[in-house]
Length: 473
Image (cartoon, rainbow, N blue to C red):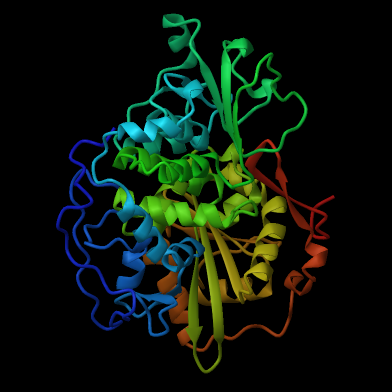
C-alpha cells in the first residue's frame, strides 16, 4: 500500500525547528525541497511535529502566527493549532507502534473473527471517509476494500497523493464471490446501501452516524462499532493504535485525508478531541510536515465538485487570517478562496454565501473577511463583499477594479493568487493608512440572530445555517 518512491518516515531527514523555539522572522531556515514522489506536505523534516513542522519553521514573534520572508503575518489555522497542541502525544503514540508493518500473531487474538476476510464498503454517493475508511479497515482486519459507487474528485486526489490503488466496485467483488462477508462502513441505513449487497451477508457495521430510520436489521448478532466522532476513519485509526498495529504510510495518509474531509479540516461542529489527536498521530506516521498545505490542496480538489459543498464549507474550506498593527488599523483580516472551473455556479449562490461570510466573521472575531472566487480555467477572480469594511478595504487595495451596483462583488480581473495578488495589495493599503469606515453593516447583527449550524445526521459534511435574519426569504 505504500506509494512508490515514498521515503521511509524513519529515514534521516533535515532537522526541523524546535517546538519550544521561535524561528527568526527575518531569516527563516531554508525550506527543504520536495522529493519527487513525496506527498503534499511532506517536506523532509526529521521531526514532523504532528504535521506542524512548517508552521514552527515560520513561527512569528508571538509563536501563534506564521511570518513569511516578505514580513506578512498570518495567524495559524485551526488545523495547525490543533496538531501542534497534540504533537507530543502524537509522537509518543506513533513511536510506540511497531516499526515493522507486518502483523504480530498475538494481536490477531483481539480482532473480531467476523471481520477477517470481509469486504469493507461505504455508502452510495461515496465520499472520502467511506473510501479511506474502507481501505483502512481492510488493512486492519485483513479484508478487502470495495466501492459502493464512483469516487469524487477529492477521493481521487487522496488516492493519487498516497499512491494507493482505487478499490474495485462492490459489484465486481460480488461477481467473483457472491457470498462474501460484508462490513458496512460510514453508514448503516439500507437506503444508503448498494443494492447489490445481500443484507443477510452483512457481518459488521463501523460508523459514526446516528441510528435513524431504515437502519439495517439482521437475523443474527453482528459486529457493531459506532462512536460519536467526526469521522469513521477516526475510529479505524484509533483501533490501529489500540491493537498496537502500525498502518502503512499509504493507509495512514488515506485515513488522515478522510478525517480532514469529514471534519472540514477540524473546524466542523462534529469534530472531537479524538479527531484532532488522530490527525496529529497520522501526520507523524505518514511523514506530513505541513498539514495546512495538505488540507489546502485537498480542498482545491474537493472544490472541483461544488454541488456537494455547503456555504459553510465554501467559506471555511480554504481560509487564512492575517494580522496587522498600524497607526490607523490593528486587527485581523480573513481571506478565503474557492478555486473552480465554473465560477458562475458559486456566484449564483451569492445570497446564500454573504450571510455565511458575516456569520463566520462574527464567530472568528475578524475585523474583515473576504471570499475570492477564482476561475482556474479563465484565470479571473471575483471578490465577495459582505459589508462596508470589506468594500472600503477592497477599493483601497484594488482601486481600478469595478464593483457591482449592490456593492457585494468586485471584479478582480486577472488577479487569481491570494499570495501574490491579493494579500500584498491589501497589506499595502493598510500600511498606507486605511482605517475601518465609521458606517457599520450587517456584521452588527448579534450572533443569536445569525442562526445556528445544523448537521445532516446522515452526512456530516452537509452543514446548513438555519434561522439567520440575513437569509433571503
